[in-house]
Structure formats: C-alpha cells, structure tokens
Length: 200
Ligand code: ZN
Image 1: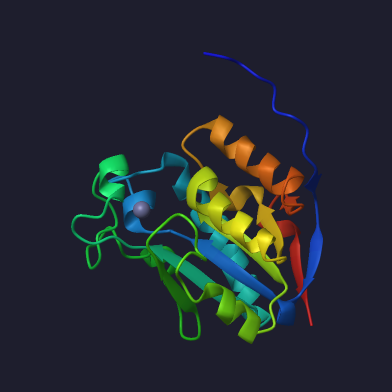
Image 2 (image 1 turned 120 degrees about the vertical axis):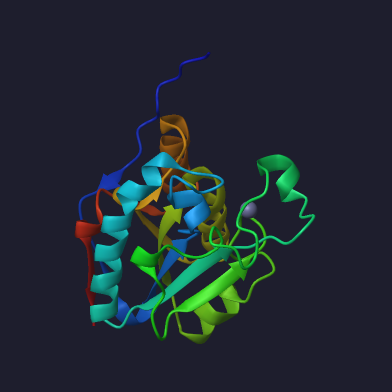
C-alpha cells in the first residue's frame, strides 16, 4: 500500500445562497446503497441521513428546488458486471430510503450511469428553474456524487458540498472527492449542513 498525504483543500464554515437560484441534489440515497441489507451497502451512508434530512428541511422552508437522482438498472445492464446486481428497477433496493422520501414538488431524476446529467433532463430542468447553485449530497462520494458534481461544474453551475452530507467506502475516496470538487471544479466544501443558509 502506498500512503500519501491528503493535499490541503479549503473547507468553509458558512455559505449563504439565494434560495431562488439554488437546487439541492440528493444523489442515490436508495436502499441498496444506504441500508445494511442493501446490495451495495456503504456503511457510512447512514450517518448522512440526518444531516441530509436537516438540509432538506431548511431548503423546503425557503422554497429551494429539490432534486433526487435514482440510480436505475434493468436486466442485463453492463454495470452488473462491475458491481453485481443493484438498484434493479422496481425492487426495494431501488427505492429512495423512507427517511428521505421525495415530497410533492420534488423532482426525481432516473439515471442509468454515475453522472446525474448523462442522458437525463437534469440540465434542462435546472435551466428552466433558473438555478445557478447546486448543493450536492448523497452517495457514493467518489462515484455518483463526484460525477454529478463534475458534470454540474462543467456546465458552470456552482457546486456546494457539505462534508456531513456525503459518504464513501474509504477515507481516501472521501477526501479525494472533496479535494477534487474544491481544487479542480472550484466548488465549495462546507464543514456541515448547518453552515448552509438560504436567503430570499
Ligand atoms: Zn449503478
């Protein structure tokens, strides 16, 4: 094993975002990834449920648009060769966890790859609603969260990621994700969802 130090990346305590120009994107918080009985369980994902719930509460109180991505595969999907069968359409594992159930007015984006923008209407919808900032939370940090964050940044959306809102399988993956979001995509890493404020 090679050990390398994590390069410094900036972590902000607080950020204030205009509610009307901001969307929260909850990535793949589905039973297969979050629950111990799930097919691709990420043990630390459960710790992010409460922070994400808090963030969604604040967002809803300010009329911030909320998006969910729902990773979705059908029989014979080539991703099964990489990861085994997971989030098969219509199964329990495919469903978004009860604790974070989408509510009326939320938008669920069904996606078939890591990137929430790839082959989906996400970009169009963000544009329709005049969104400039995306607050991205969910799992898995270095896979679907990072691909979605990167894709948002390439389209010039500002990306904000609270550290307690994302989870990974290893500490390396976790920090590599945050460093990449901060350093390469010029996003904002915030210490906690408590540091994210919305204004009118
Ligand atoms: Zn998948």
